[in-house]
Image (cartoon, rainbow, N blue to C red; front, side, top):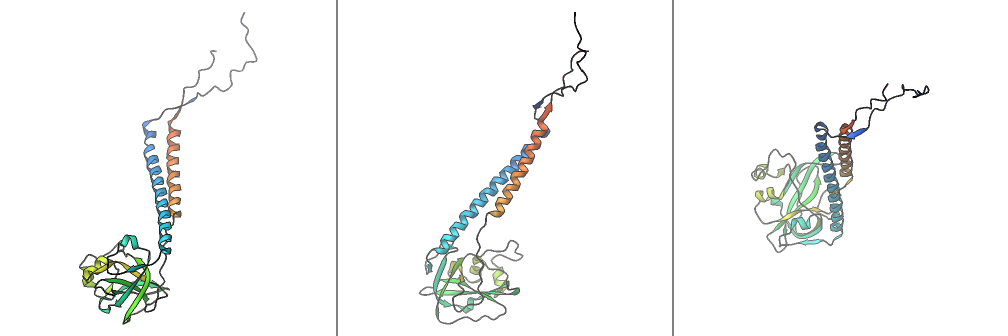
Length: 252
């Protein structure tokens, strides 16, 4: 004889079924932005490592003995940011002035004067500093210039450029590059510009900013890209989980 348990309560909640991982095409599409964001995060980490390496290299170059600039052509990449010194005579005929240079809230000029190296026809450009107004006097006689080697570059947006531009500018230029100056004056020229040391005589206001590459910005971007990748991956997992059909329960 079958006894029915009166205490049994069949009105209790019924199991809704277990979850299964079943990726769908719409969810799988989220893997593309997740992978892209992760790759961008890795790239930013690599950029941060490059900046740290460059900062260490610049610190080593700043402490290295000065390079003597002579007649032999310099390897600009190897000498850039190093301390240099050169002896010769300033050539006022080749002097130019770079406009719209700022100092202490005022607009003026950077004075660029070629130095004809002693015992050579080769010259090196010397940025002698900032002046508020022209003309800028050129010292006479033989001088020894100390400073840091630099390789100037054109601005990101140059409305007027090319080898013909320098001839049109005369002695007042919007920016300086060595290739433009070589088109302006074809005489032999070293591949760097000397940013003259503030302690040297025969110069003007020389407050050169020291550019130290920093990795903080790239690390911040890396965290953001990895966060976006994690969000996309989390959505993919969430949308790929499906529930099994719930149990029908015991027969009545």
